[in-house]
Length: 208
Image 1 (cartoon, rainbow, N blue to C red):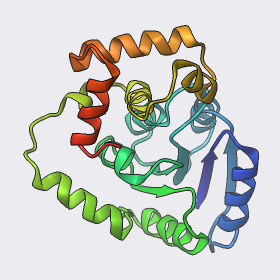
Image 2 (spheres, one colour; image 1 turned 90 degrees about the vertical axis):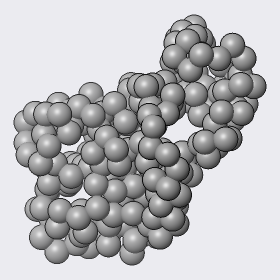
Image 3 (cartoon, rainbow, N blue to C red; image 1 turned 90 degrees about the horizontal axis):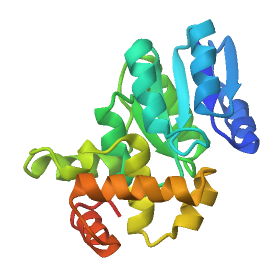
Image 4 (tube, rainbow, N blue to C red; image 1 turned 45 degrees about the horizontal axis):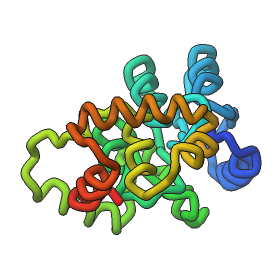
């Protein structure tokens, strides 16, 4: 089994590597610090599993996920996130992820998830399974936020949580001006004028 870890924090990559080395059959563990580095490594070698962080400095992990599934569909992608599951998991699974874990997951659960995903199965936690059931119980008409790109979706959630353009820019390593451009695009697609409308929408749709 060949595994690629994509996360911009070295301490996280080191921790994941230590846990994954316990697995039988692992022949290679490579690391990437951002989305472009991960995509370049995938061009050079075939990986069975990609552990992919959602928040990356160069592009959204959701955008990387879309690229990977388009070019290397046989690579199973397990998403890792600091964000609560219900915000991003449904979107990630719809884009082709094989599973979704938060970074505070116990090492035993991570190993279980990797084993399931390597067998071609999906991995979701019990709490996420409940959220998915609730989501699909609602009418399945395409919701407005599903028209957003991965990065737009990520920024929408942060705006809805009351973060300033400066805070979002610092977290994503982009300028205030770039965040402002994303905000304008989000507002146009969502047909909103104020952040309060965005927040209300996200609350009503259980995104925050």
